[in-house]
Amino acid sequence: MADFNELNDPELEALAVALRENRPEPEADFAEKLDTAVADHFPKEWTDDANPGRRSFSDWLTRHFGNARQVLLPATAGLAGILVVAVVVGVGMNGGGSSDTNSDSSVASREFSAGDSGAVSAEPEFEDRAQGNESFDSSAGGAAANSIEKLSSKQLDQADVQVVPASKSPGVYAAGTDDRKVAYETDITLGTDPDNVQDVSNDIVGVVDDHDGIVLDSSVEDGPAGQAGADFSLMIPSAQLESAVSDLSGLADLRSRNQETEDITAPTLTVEDSLRDSRARVDSLVKELSEATTDEDRARIEDELAQERRQAARLSTRLNKLERRASLTPVSVVVETGGDTSSDEDDSAWGVGDAFDDAGRMLGVAAGVTLIALAIAVPIGLVLLIALALNRAWVRHSRRRALEDN
Amino acid sequence: MLEAAPTDTGPQIRNFEDLYRQSRDDLYSYVAGLLRDRVAAEDVTALAFERAYRKWEKFDPGRGTARGWLFGIARNAALDELRKRKREAPLTHDPAAAESVMDASEDLERQATVTEALATLPAADRELISLKFYAGLNNKEIAGVTEISPTNVGTRIHRAMTKLRDACQKEADHG
Image (cartoon, rainbow over all chains, first blue to last red; front, side, top):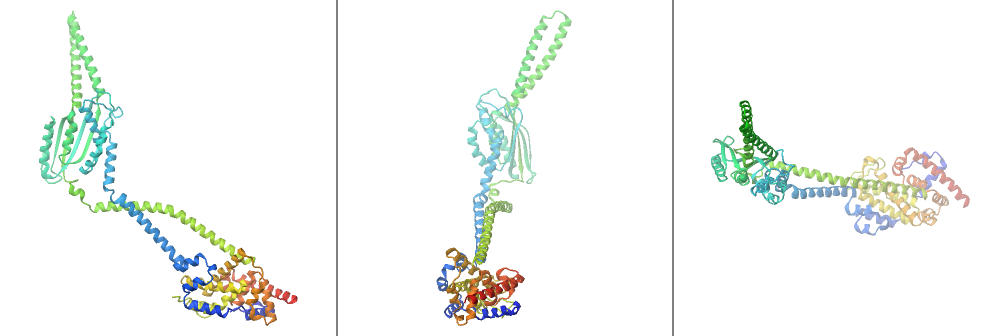
């Protein structure tokens, strides 16, 4: 209760008493109606009838949703959370969960398409060679071009499907030059069970025979997985290299294939020219020798002739080697056991490692989606907060003005 | 529902019903003194109680008394009413409304003079006088409601009462 004595003025204190004694009191009807409304906890009928014109949007929210801030904020946050989770799951289902085959095939495709001088792009090259239409892009010529693909047989199957159209394109081989000399070198690694090593080895020899190749060296070792295996050094006619490699790759699980190519046109031509010159020189010396008149001249010419013939022999040997490199391709085949077993059963098995991979992918997607959602939500939230703060400040200001102006 | 709302003044307020019983007439008096319109005062009083009822669970006793909180709600509603009047049709002085509020005091000349004089005061002074002498809030509660410092509240009430006394003197001289 107010203390009127604090006014320290008898006249003001008397005025205060008069104010208090004559303060406005509510009408009996209104007091009774309000009592009833409070007793009934402000029923809907009361809310609908009582001073609707003075109700705010906040009143409507409070009436329909309880305490708006306490209910709507968690509800909005919950809804936003559900939306984010839904998006994450949706993206995960499309790009994450089933991404096994998609991502794998895309990787395989990338590897093959990037490896122009590798296994895939080597196929059109082999085709061209088989048709006697050898050509080699100068950008890839000269230096050796390497491409190593570590592939499962499943991946290779997928890759082979994509290779077919690629083989119809020119690739690195431009049409035109027919006299190109290209040397190849191929390493193949196959995987199989220890029990199958001997069979696979026999099949390798069979493939070599079928393609008129040569087994330069071979060794087969029995034993448990990891120890058992076989090594083969083969020479395959380059004209049949494509089909031979294809046959060899199909004998077991292909674990890797390394294809190297080297354009030896320039050294071949150089050696050919040198050999031609050397032989011409030999012929010249022979003629010179027949026309020599003194013993001293004959001795000198015979000495030169011997040197030139040795030079021609060396050049001939070099040319033979180059031509052999172009016509015969060394192929190294290694048969492994243990380690990366890529049987169909293992391919289809889904283990703990895959679960971790999937979980990592999902978390990555979730983090990305959350980041995007935050990037959208934070500015919107900030704008809303600023708008709310401005509105609040404006309402306070206008209330103060209303008090001052009345 | 609506339990435990301690207050540092007056009887213990345990629930909304306690708050309502202890504040109904005081709140109406304050709003009527501020608005000088019986119908509007009834509407705003009812609206304030309804809002307080709906937000009762949100009330934090640590931030002030339940009465102070209730009067803050009523003040906002009353000021919104004043804003609305300002937008629609500015109300300068409404003797009829003041008379309707003060019907009971018509038989006393001095009381009528006080009523008339009060109506001539600015709304801010009228509000302080209403809170202090109609509603019976102490300075601390008034400070909480009006967001004025407690020491300043005393000074401004004294100044408003002095103005009222002068206005009463003028009314008496004119009468």
